Image (cartoon, rainbow, N blue to C red; front, top):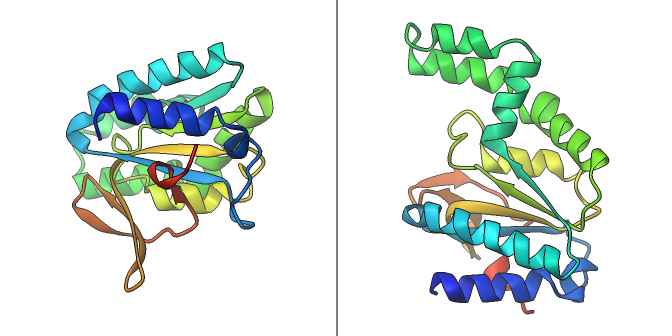
Length: 196
């Protein structure tokens, strides 16, 4: 599917009343994965900005949250940012990952920060981006699992650099960068499989 085709499909689905009113989900949470090839990240970011502009022109309000930007915001709010920068060069990658996993834990820190943004915004659809940038210290399936109780009132679209596959044998899998096959998450829909 070309970028133009992706744009048209995403616009048609997201601007549709069926999507906005969460119809046809069978009591599932309104989470949608927008998978894309990692090498298309720059094009997808551009597409996302164009999509937001076009949707907002038609009255569909989008709240965009980039997980990387939010992570930095949390580190700064907790007065940890400068410490992380100072120790980064002198600790192992494993130690840094462990530190960041602790201070940016989805359940105790990240999702509450997202919840604050949801409460402060008037929006119709939540766009989550920055998934690849926060790997490995934040895993997409952990974010989605912890968001289930917080972001179920409005549709959420996660822009995901990789594959989102469903098979009867293995269930659903979020394969980040098309290589990492360990994020089992089955409660989302592939937005490219949704009808407008």
